[in-house]
Image (cartoon, rainbow, N blue to C red; front, side, top):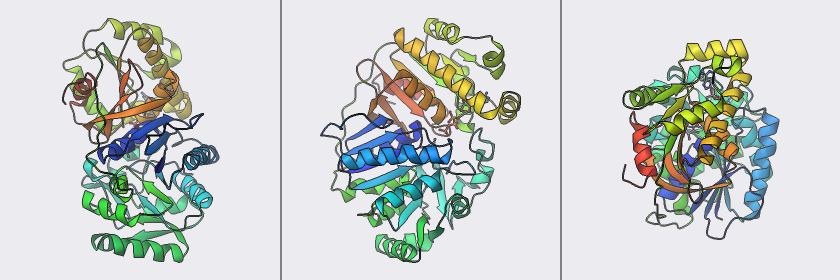
Length: 414
Ligand SMILES: Nc1ncnc2c1ncn2[C@@H]1O[C@H](COP(=O)(O)OP(=O)(O)OP(=O)(O)O)[C@@H](O)[C@H]1O
Ligand SMILES: O=C(O)[C@@H](O)C(=O)CO
């Protein structure tokens, strides 16, 4: 294994694996830290954790365990993947985990670059934009678990780190890989170990990737991984073969993100859907078995969703608790997925990082092979014979994403 990756959620991990696979790396996504060695042909291993919104000390412990396993597989470079909207709580976990990994690897200059221009996320003067608005005006200020209210990534990171935060500005990035590397070294030498790097477009990320050659630790969104495979001499033309599955589908969405809600509204115009509310979970009204039975007997692309507008989510959180309601929905979706796959569903689409993590863990899927891209940041995945999946990050995908994903999972073109 050449490149070892640690993802703080499951959809984000498949987003990273998608980028690496598109750049020709033979890549596998693991659910948590594997119990044994990786098979020999894997060039990039992505250990998917569910550490984005748990207490920082637990996130550090899990991330260091992943690091230990990846180093034992021979990885020369470690990549810590977090969200392109820098999703974090007030305490972390991006800063605490990045610092713990940097300590363990004795890394002096660590890139921090959440940019993903393909999905509209760019960084200019340390500020994160989503398309043409700042992060705190993008809808992310209403996220159920990690509301983002400050667009200055340097300030957000400094508040959750022990050390000072450095910066490589856009003008330096536009000057190319050597200038970026020189500024990274200078910031590191000045004691600023975590260094926010501006990036506006893919060509910036390729230069940042080239500047990262030989660095022990790189952190960011999937975009900054674009330039890393070339450092290992990987040919971008290498692509794994993909064949889909026959059989029925189920779509499960616990994502309350803006893009997902638009995709759901679009999908419900032509497909059947069942909404799950907090009241149904906490006061009774639908069991996972009832819902799975409905999905199993519904033709086409049945959608089960709890996705709701920010005021509905806020009311549920006030009434039942933020953590309690999140966990109740996640467990519910994992149970529905278990019943559906045990009853013959072969194609599973999930929306939302936490939701997808709960489903993949609930199904006990240990590793996922990476198939073709459905939409930027979302690959088709194979969990072994008879089950293919697509794990969609909340804000990813076009408005007709669910139908497109269904086509790719069945082996057709997008
Ligand atoms: N109606 C609801 N009320 C309260 N909480 C909800 C509701 N529906 C879902 N949730 C919870 O909100 C959280 C949504 O997070 P999730 O990561 O799944 O989606 P997302 O934030 O859109 O995706 P991503 O992290 O990929 O951007 C989950 O923990 C889910 O259980
Ligand atoms: O980087 C992103 O935006 C996604 O891969 C993700 O992590 C969302 O959960």
